[in-house]
Length: 402
Image 1 (spheres, rainbow, N blue to C red):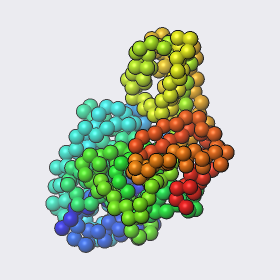
Image 2: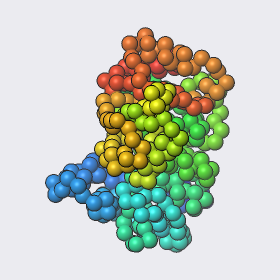
Image 3: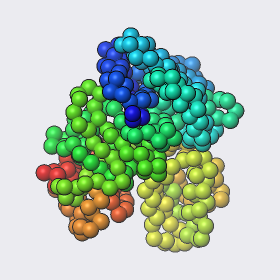
Image 4: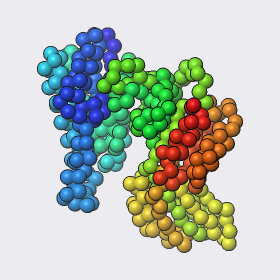
């Protein structure tokens, strides 16, 4: 008997018919002789609807109360799915994140898992029940409800798979696997049979919305092999693992687009040791993630610092910088929001020169201007105007994946 963790996203349980579709998938897995733990997200647009309800009350709700509100979405899903399983003759029990043992830190709205006590889950499995767990949520040491941030249900599923030493962790979505680009925008996008943790982590962090990047980090750390597949079409998906069998020798595994980008510039910062630390240390103290960083060559005793942050953190970042401006100086702090990040990812580029040149040539031929560039061993990212992002993705994809 195997232990399988299955995760279903919000679109997979959006209405009655889809809840029963998921229940049938889970029931088939259980009746094949497996123990099953299911992690479920909030139905459809429930989370967005709850955010809108909060906005009707206040424009500045506390993060603690937002976590209290948003966690209710997953609780609806787990109860409904447990009911549907019961109708199909499968014993099931629903558990909130804290009932399932998720203990987190105190970072409301983007909490990180500190500990996972699986005693209750294992007890329910021992009673031959399917355990349906609310993803995206946990409890901190103050016994406050916390949420793990957007895509947190993926992280919940991988954490459970690791803690329970599951034989398989399946991530069900509304697409059939991991593609070389968004198949809704790029007609020539191809589904990958396999992809490495490192490649998937880069794609997830660069805007590909199939998997949450924190879940991939966790899977890599604990060696949890993932399978990404469709809850609507029963076809083989994509395996995510440490070493992928690359039979086709693909140089690039994917082209990703991320419009969640703001560019912040600090002009004429004194060009002396310690200034970069003062700037980015202040941002780190508020848990603001910084991505691409450019620093101009010093001139006239000053330099410019330009970097990107998530769009939702832009105003907070500017506020923090202005509070700390007496420490690092700078003539002006400005934020620009009409940008996108387009990236190519592939382990094959480590041993193949000329990838950057081909990417830049594709952008040149598509008349796309590059504002910033960032590279690593397996990815190249560029910051461009948001209105040109889809055209850029298609052009780059056409060069590397005909």
